Each structure stands twice: as structure tokens, then as C-alpha cells.
Length: 571
Image (cartoon, rainbow, N blue to C red):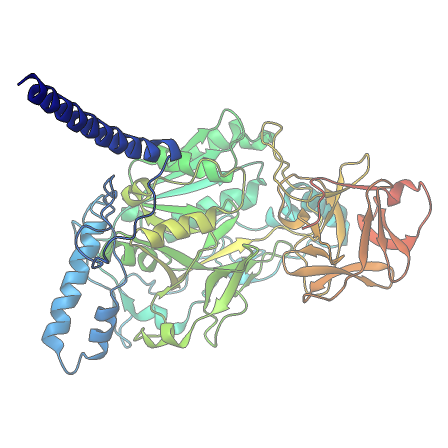
């Protein structure tokens, strides 16, 4: 009996030991996974690629947006075959867009679109000629102004200080008649009488008196008073005496219509424009103008009518050129057969004007209808006030000047809006002239990350002055704003600005369009601070008195051949 009991006990112990061993083995297998930090590859049965196979452990974020519906594109081509189905899909597409931009206030008031009546003069057109400021006076009716040889030195000094011939400008009436350069068809558009009101915003810094004040006068003279809510002037820390107490007294004649606000330090054009939007409280639409321009005949109704119809539209007038020397108004160049061009850019983010495409031509019924543009120039445009705030105004990181035109254009298009150029709204703009000293950026603004070529120990920099396609390089005061003083030298030994290369033209240095392997002519010897033109073994030289850049035989240690280049590197 005892023997049987012992055998049974032994069998029980063996079974228990085996069970424990199996459990331990299983546990060790699990620990192996932990020890290696990943699971051993185990090719299980092939599963179908549906269901929850690829469901993430952390849910994907919910992103509201509108994808391109390729099926919808196909259906649009079948419009004749299945119009009801297409209409249904278009409605769904529109609903999706509205959901996507739910953060923007919906359109409250629906204004009718303008109507063209070819035989009936437009309802906002003058019935006769525009009254002159001074009959027969200088600059009236777009006649040029000649100051004569006795005032030549004073005129050159004013160009150096302000960028314009202020001697000639001071002879021109502030209320002058400018002439009508619109297409004839523009005179026969009829606009809704209940257009939105406007706050005109003008930012200025150390502007000349008459060109600046004439901008205000042109707005008051050529804008229907019932739509002109206010003119907001933002002084970006000017230091000129005539822009202080004299300006404050001068604007009192408009009894509060013109308002003046001053920045406590230099903010730059872009931030000052955002300040202007915050100070402007009365107008439904914000209209931005530069401080040296003149609006054209019946400019306002065509500019704001598209915004009245669709609040997500930003409009741009056609910007013509006012000669800064004799103050004649010249139609903007380039474009198509009607002189119309869109705004675009190249890979260097350089502003371009390109003709309208056939597609854009065909989508318009009339030649003077507004047309779409990828980007605006940025100086003159209109936008609904609330929409501008919904976009976040300008990026506050943009300093002083430049790039804001692309930033606001991208935001408008990406947020469901449109940028429209308006052929029947025109404004003349005075462009700075050669010889202007510029408005240097203040010390608290950091240098832009550009390659600036400066005369060693001087404040003179190589400057293209906007010249291109064969223009001559010049020397100008360093302004730390990039633009015309932005250059680079690449490993192919090309000295470049945007798509232009520096080239020798006898002793002068010109800048011209270049291809990949053209004008590989330059070497910068960093230790010696010298630029060598390798084909001629000449050195880059300068004449600081004549503001000239030239080539000359290399002379060791010659001060005018010594240059420094910030952020030097092979690109």
C-alpha cells in the first residue's frame, strides 16, 4: 500500500515539474520579445487590405479641407450629356467650399454686378471735363513740367533727398487735372448706387510735401463723398519738419475726414499698414495707396464693386507711371494687346508682369471686365476690412518693405478668395529716380540675410538701381534692405542678382540676363578683399564721387578695389 502511494506521489511530482517547466519556457519566450525590443517576424496568413488593418493607434487628426475631385472634373466635361447630375455635383462642391471656410463671415448683402450699356454714359461718370486745379498751370491735363536750367541743381538735390524732382512737383497744383487714359468702354459701365464705404490708408515716411499731399487731394477730388468714410495717415516715424506741425495744421481743412496717427518708432511699411487697418474704423473696405500717387478718373466704383459682390475678393487698380521728373502720366507698359498684365513671380521671388492667358481672355465677356491674377504688386489694393482681419493682416515678421505682396496674395487665394485686377480703375504712381539716397532701415531692424557687396570701410554698396538686361551697375548708400543690393557669387563663378549676371562692357560693369553657363567670369579673393574679372585679369573698382562701379588694372592694396561681402559662401 505504501509502495503504491509512493509511486503515485512520484508521478504527481513529475507532472507538476513538467508543468512548471512548460510555464517557465513560455515566460522566457515572452521575455525574449522584451529583451530584443521588438517582435520576432512571424509571417502570418495574408490578410485583405481593408477593414481596420491600417487603423492607427492614435487617431488621425480631423482636417477640414477640400480635395480635388477628379470625378467632378470628368462630370463637368459631360455637361451636355448629364446637366442635372453635374448641377448636383457642383452644388455639393460649393457646399464643401462653404464648410471649409466656415470661419469667414458669410456674405450678408448681395450687390448686383455692374452693367455695360454701350450707348449710355455710366452713372458715376462726369458729364464734362474734369475741372483743372489752375487753368493752364504746370502739369495740368498731363502736360510735362520743365523747371529750366536755373533750377537744375535744386532739382537734383531734391531727387537725392526724396527720389523725385520736388522742385517741379511744387509748381504743380495739388488739385491738378491728370487726364483720362482709361479704355473708352470704361465710361459706359453702370454700378450699383449702394457701394460699400472706404477707409483710405496711406503710410508715409519722410515723404516730400507736394507729392504726398497731392495724393490726399486726388482722393478727395475723385472719390464720391458718400463713399469716402475717412483717410487714415500713418506716419512711420518721419523726421522731416514739414511732416510734423505743418501737416497737423494742414489736414484740419477737411474737418476730421483726414486722420493722422504716428508710430513711436520706425515699424516699416508692412507693419504700419497693419496698424492702419487697426486705426481705420469707419469704412467697410480698406483701400491702400502709396504716399506718392494720384488716383484716376472714376477710380472708386469699379474698384469696390467686385468686393461688394463677393467679400472674399481683393481688387487692384491698373498702376500707371508718373514720371518723377516732369510729372507726366504714362500708361503702364507690357501686357497683351489691351495693355493688361497679370502679376506673377519667378523662382527668385522677383515680381513679374505677364500677359493674360487665352483662358483668362475667354472667361470674360467684355474686354474691360476685371481679371484674375496670381499676385498683386502690393502698393495699391482694396480689401474688405473684416476679411483682412480674418486673414490675420500682414505677417508681423515682415520688416520694413518687400515680400508682403506675395504673402497677402497667397493667403487670399488659399482662403477661398480671389485677386482681381480692375482695368477701369487706374492710379498713377511715382517711382523713385536714379540718385535717391534712400530711407535706410533703423538700427533695431536686423540686416536681411543677403549677400551685400560693400566697399571696405565705407557705407557704399554695389547697387543695380533696378537696372537689368544690359543696364549699368552703380554704387549707392548701403540700405540693408536687400532688393537691388542683393547679389550672390556661385561656384560657377557667376556674380548674380536674381536671373541677371554681372558682365564686363569695356571698363563698365553691366547686368544682364544669363543662362546656366554664361558669364562665368568672377573670382572673390576673400583674404585680399578683391573681386577679379578673370577674362581680363582686371579688378572691380569704384568711383565714390561719381557713384560708379568699373573695371581697372589690379593694384595691390588700392582702397577703391577692396570689398567685403557679408554671408559669403558658395551657393
